[in-house]
Image 1 (tube, one colour):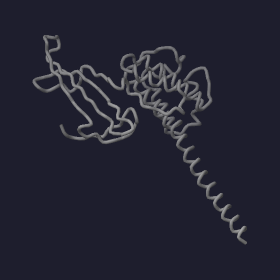
Image 2: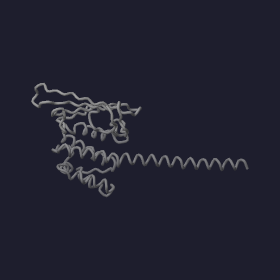
Image 3: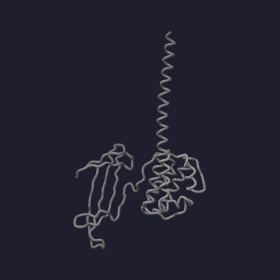
Image 4: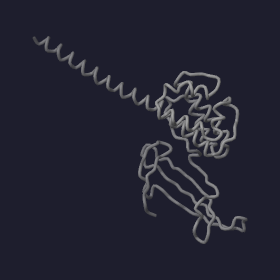
Length: 235
């Protein structure tokens, strides 16, 4: 086995290059007189090379086999470990919001409409927590922050809520379940991830940079003060 590929660990969120033996692919072919004909189960295991992580990611997919070649599209796919595509987020994002996001990711394919409902609740939690805005519907809350958010983020929010039944979701109570396609549920999840990044993570990083800058500036002032005091004492 040879080759390498770029990869982002879903546990530690670190970008890295995966090389053998950090990954393994296996294929199990079978027929057993089933109604689908020749099938193959493909498994992949990737181990994060980060010494502080070392988690393993396990996926599997079921394919039809034609001759000795698998079809281009799988019949079924499984995310075995971790069980969803949820990204790890820091604890300065409120836990209830993170929990809704993680559950929305977990059931995205199993129940897109339930996943979308959780994503809507997650978005409402974000807006109420970050912007301190509370209205009757998520639609009204989104409109209330239009002039506060940057243009690119607003375009992303506005474009996603215009897709399929997502707009209907925004105008109703967040706990009302409305049918959506799996792709639409995925769009809502990606929008939530973007809002986490733009509003919580970027703000936190700015605050940390500011704290570091202030610390250095205050340290320099203290050094100059001590130097001046030492010179005065010598004189």
